Length: 339
Ligand code: TXA
Ligand code: MG
Image (cartoon, rainbow, N blue to C red; front, top):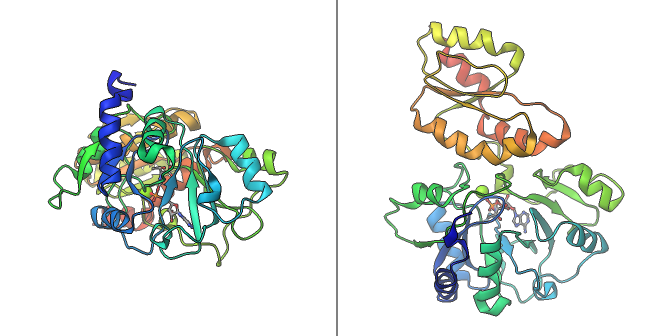
């Protein structure tokens, strides 16, 4: 992490901007967030405007480790307490019933609230300074709607640097996000635990704490933008290919003169116009994932081919993000192999 990461002047300036209703981008251990005062509906509206995100999508509220949760939620079920004790500060978001005094703007009008206490030292310093640690920072990932989440301050500048609306004037530095993919989301607002979004904290680790596996979302599960089919996507189409088929598909693509950018972890390919070697370990792969997708996007290839990683449970978060980035794999591949 850079020396500037705990720059108290920058943190005070960012906290004051939040208190004035401005937006601030800040690092967390998962991805960078685009923050606003969670209790200021106008400030929260700027988030939606800057991201180009529909306003009925709820955002996560970030709180300091010492925060009084009863300010934010109307009740804290036993399971929530257990998960908080086990995993906070850290990459876990809980969906709980929202306290009556909290504006519904942060929840996209739902009666719940997504809440998390981040582990990153810069995020914690910001949360402890903003409203003297009593505030909450509403923050989705600091990227345009549907695009790849940022894991460095430079990625945030790449997303919003040319933003004509100029809503984001302050980006806190905090090095590269350690985890690299968004927090695990567990809904506890409707009784039993439901895993809304897989992440670094796996379903197994949640089961070890709760005594049973979290359920998978059903039709009544709350809306979550990170659960849309096409999400986390670079501009270049992404195709996910099993290792066994990779050699054959690459040969066909090259025979059609297609410019291929390749993210591989076992099978390399000299004919690709760009490539990144990913690591054979779920946490290390997640750490590098979004930076690799951004780098492959810059190659201006016809497509990004991703060698599908293992499917064991430790890889659930990575596979979830890859599947969404590559939501139309077969269609893209078929079009590029026509003629
Ligand atoms: O790691 C993360 O969670 C990052 C960092 C910045 O903390 N944030 C993040 O935010 O990924 P975002 O907005 O990109 O994704 C938040 C997800 C969305 O899928 C949203 O729908 C869901 O959390 N969410 C937030 N509040 C919710 C609520 N009350 N009910 C259901 N889903 C909720
Ligand atoms: Mg996001």
